[in-house]
Length: 194
Image (tube, rainbow, N blue to C red; front, side, top):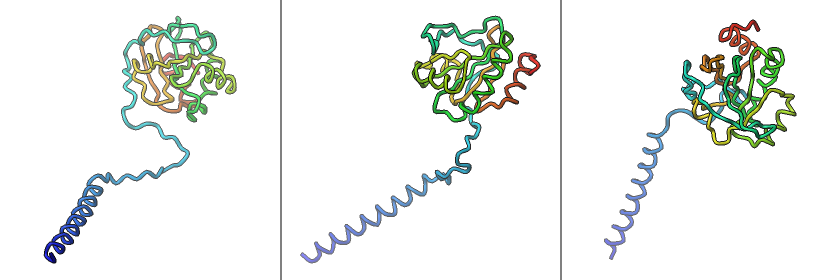
């Protein structure tokens, strides 16, 4: 009887040791050395991995999207002028910060370049209210089924596409775009002295 009890005690101790050592080995092997601490809290850094697979030189796909204000379906394609397409959503802080630069270019270059916003996340009502609060007057569309978003390969927001008059995606900017960067892109891609 005593032998049986000793065997049970030693078996239990051995099982615990194996479980503890095994757990430690497993957790050590899966540690990639990266912790969850932010290096710059409150600062959104530009993506450094290939999250946006937008191919320069590709033709903008033919997609009809509903207008935020009217709900009417509209073909998203250049209408005789270069087109700047900005992908955004209402709770995206970098999207909020870049919107005044996009609005300024839209106002200053009316009839020269078209600026539109495409929102894949929010309802038309939320997008319209956000735009009104921000003073945005250029055309906004929703893409709730991610039709355009997936076809052009956008993986992060904000992302801005620059499309030539013949519908070719000539450049992209992933992440927040400053006024200076936006104006430089207009000059570089479309020859517009901004």
